[in-house]
Amino acid sequence: MTGRVWAIGEPEADGMTRLSTEVATLARRIAEAAGREAVGLVVEVDAGTAATRLADFVPRVIAVDAIAAADRPWAAVAAPLIAEIVGGDGPAWIVIGATPDGHDLAGMLAVLLDAGVLSTATDAAWDPTDGLVVEMSVLGGRAITSCTFTGDRGIVVLRPNAVDAEPAPAPGSVERSTATAAAMPTVTIIDRVASDAGAVPIEEARIIVTGGRGVGGPGGFDLVAELAELLGGTVGATRAAVDSGWIPYARQVGQTGKTVKPALYLALGVSGALQHKVGMQTAGAIVAVNRDPDAPLAAFADLYVVGDLFEVGPALAAELRSRRG
Amino acid sequence: MRIVVLAKPVPDTTGSERLGPDMRLDRGSAPTIVNPNDEHAVEQALRLVEAVGGEVTLLTMAPPNATEMIRKALAMGATRGVLVTDPALEGACALATAKVLAAALATLEFDLVLAGIDTSDGGAGIVAAAIATLRGLPYLSHATAVEVADGRVRVRRVAPGGHDVIEAQLPALVAVTRMVGDPRYATLKGIMAARSKQIATIGLGGLGLHEAELGGAAATTRVLRARVPAARGATRVVRAPATEAAHEIVEFLVERRLV
Image 1 (tube, rainbow over the protein chains, first blue to last red):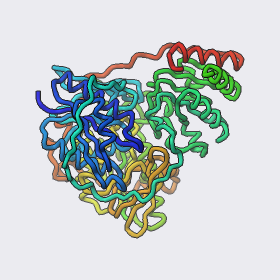
Image 2 (cartoon, chains in turn blue, red):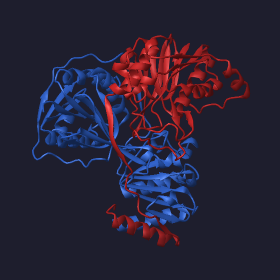
Image 3 (tube, one colour):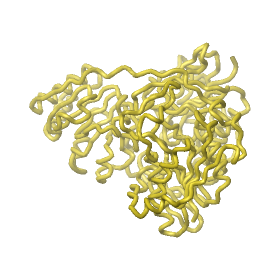
Image 4 (cartoon, helix red, strand yellow):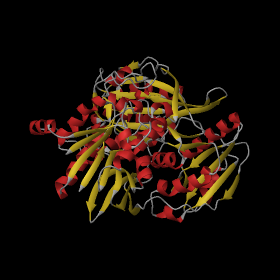
């Protein structure tokens, strides 16, 4: 079977997102099983650094320097260049990370390459009978569907934390592309505002400590942030906490926020209403502290502490601190 | 200003939604609502025309009974609805949906298109970007605020660690998050007015499209099978003084190798 499996690396300030390493790992595994070649693709103002990192995970990486990415949304710059490289190359599966930019890119590439998209995938594997079988969590985690592409091109949008990144036995080669396709219709970035700088995006975090209405106010998030720091995680929030102005929207987990799959989800003062549950119920472990013994979370948390988060939280912080020594 | 809002009917998140025998969402299994993020797009559109004048057209691709959902959004204050419906579209994939909506957009006059950033029924979150690409429109996504002035649209876009301010010439397509503003409730007057508002219905033929390329039978993706995920284990409930409860949490984290 001919064709390639493409892993799209998504750049970030100091290199490349961790999700990109998961994307590349999955692309390599699919390629090995299907007898295809896995190729990484990085588009960035200076793609070199990210391309070298991606080459730890796939045998070959193509780096595309794109000066336009300096002041344009990344997907609009990357999509035509990726389409130029992949488009002339026959059958192709393309793996992209499920980030805001990744979804934009997938939508654009679907059109430019006339390829189907299977979105928010949790796994993908080659099967000699069915072809590329992509698993997706649907209905807010209550069902898992296995899907495939009907044509010879397909785009898989991979959720963070679904695949364990694993470097290849030997680093791959990096080459430069001369692709020149112009960006999509002009959208200009006129300002970049860092209000939540340094924080790990919640979709990518392995550990999330979430505050809900029960934290009572912006001050309550100090405790949430302290526990997140002690656990090496990041801060999440419910819609109620965001609507109260206690924390930025980018932290919201749930139906109108982000869907997350961390290894640990620690929920403080969170009731676990259905709209929240659909965004976090596939987490590896769910621990909750809530005064209400009958909150919906009590029905699906792994460990449910009935208690006051302002007593249990500081006690937990103290014990974690003493463990750290 | 003429604004088109892409609005999709979705099942309400009630916990009763399920997959049908064809392993696609059984759309009869829960009451139908306007996709929550699309409702925010309608609200944004209404605020813009309230500020600068104009009209709001709702564009929907769905089965014929979607007129009920369209009336709900018309009751909020939108001007008219356009429903693209065709039996051949059952089972259409995300790319086909984008192609159909892009073709329908070509029949409308507009300065701005608004859409919700994703749909609550497990949508791929790629349709708006695909439509912008098909129509050659600037695409501004993940908007938390939208302003229009001097023939340009300016958007605050969610970015890692903050936000970007991005701008483009109109016409453009903007995909919004719920942060653009909470949808208003329909007033009784609005509900009454919606009854006489026009909802135009178009089929694939009316758009010059062919079933062979865009129908469910030509979908680019196919469901092979569906299963129920392994159930989470039983909940361990702890009722104990704070230090003991905290200790239980740490024990659990150690057991799961999370600390």
